[in-house]
Length: 237
Ligand code: ADP
Ligand code: UDP
Image 1 (spheres, rainbow, N blue to C red):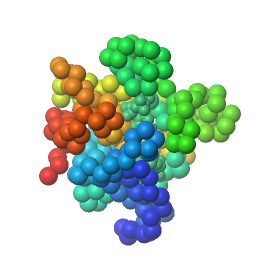
Image 2: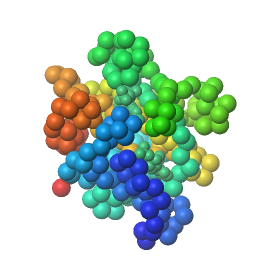
Image 3: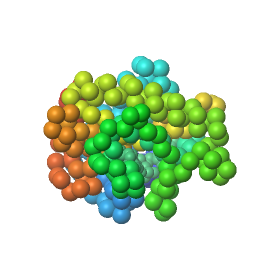
Image 4: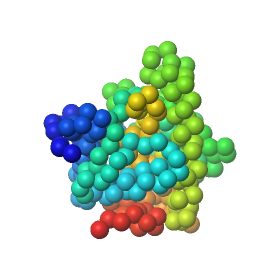
């Protein structure tokens, strides 16, 4: 596989073409952003930690029968993925109230959500990723009703697999964001699953072990990601 030109540099990853039009290389950089890119910092080891973490999680999801874009690790900070037509929609499932749900609905942080909730957000930094719904997505052509139904079903299946995986490591999966794309007509999980795109709390102390440490200036960001990885069996060597 030959690495070709950079197609896109996002806030945390860069995307490269390859000699195979159906394959891309994702490069996980050390860059970290918050507040729609208004705060940027470089955190040592982050690219490697998230690349390894993501590979481990994508493997677990594939084992559970969830279609993912992940193909193989290429280096410490790179992996090969299927080239998806990404849908500009972020799918969020929440098991426990936190973040924007607390801010917008005045729910108490930490309250259990039973059943877990599902939300859609438009992937658009300039508009601050506004919350949308199925009707808006259909009208504006961001995704079809069939694609939305499939994404919702897959996002909940991911919850069943990962809630248990993290529980076995003494962790609460509070919420997470997934992005999907289309590959040969099928809805496939894309982007990444790492502590950058989810909330993970210690089950006993409720200590935050995810990107909220960066957002809230708590320090020890990458150390927390490594601690989570260690507890669920990710190898960072
Ligand atoms: P952002 O675009 O939000 O700044 P990143 O820095 O993570 O995010 O950039 C990675 C980009 O690559 C995102 O826009 C994401 O939608 C896109 N992407 C992730 N996986 C794939 C894939 N398999 N095929 C095509 N694009 C992908
Ligand atoms: N999330 C993300 N990218 C975004 C928005 C949210 O990865 O652009 C994740 C976030 O880390 C959390 C979940 O989605 O795990 C729900 O985020 P929320 O709506 O609470 O927004 P926040 O307050 O984190 O911006």
